[in-house]
Image (cartoon, rainbow, N blue to C red; front, side, top):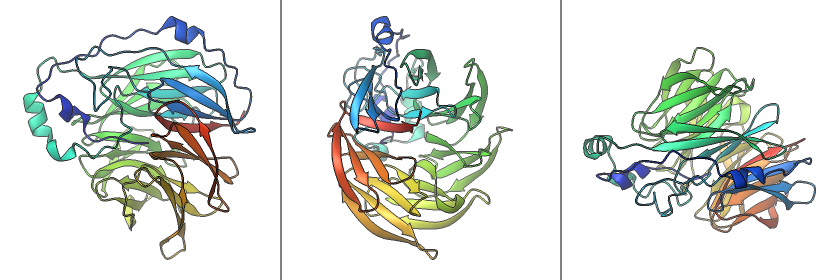
Length: 378
């Protein structure tokens, strides 16, 4: 799902402003895809589209074109060069009716560590012009028809957006030196709350019981733990160097991927205490659990692999790897955990992996620079 590090460093001393983008009526009106099958939705950043894979055939059955939202900046962010919005992550509402897609305005697929060493919050804030402004986007789509229901503008970079487990709220982080969480009403899209967190927050996730919210603060090297009801920060749990996402793990634990440390921090969300650290030896892109197999799967974009760890009760032991595509990124399992789908950013494909044998069964061609993926059963 990668990734982040500090794109703002590209623009020190450069004045730019995103335009007030309007929907491209042609693209929006053409979306009447009717997804009436079990599907995997794959966000294609460079193609500005969503490929809809039919899980019964493992073929792309539909394509949802996203509106042509463009920025007016004079140069591209982190190599995008075109001023396009680069759709990145996707989530599904609990009732399976809506999709939320974030458009951070930059190509994050190349990794996030390339500019961290040249960035400090103090120097950045001291060099930015008074009219410096970044405006990200969140699109809400009908999951069946592909119709765009709402376009939200965000004062800052929206890296991901997730629905609360009860479906009433939409949460997103503002990826800036003074990090904020925005909480929107998921029906009216009115801003309900703004929560201050650490520096350069990225992924926002919920605990399994929906009572806590977690945001990885990349420049603060911690995870903010937020009470989902009161919207109060309960704890800032220290983890590794440059965390990007905290994901629900096995046995109620949370997996935190640390890019700079090339590690996974595992902590208990009940006590907010660290449990252990798994050293990887590669930069992780995403860490997810397979509850059926008691495993942790971690994608390795530079190695074109996914690595599998098993929790033995006394620790995590690497149990194998699967060779997949270049730029391995987001991971999603089918409903019984027997098949895994992994986006390959640089190949424009999705690898289909048999979990029992740890073998890639096939690659599905999608759009260019695929990243986020979510599975929906009708």
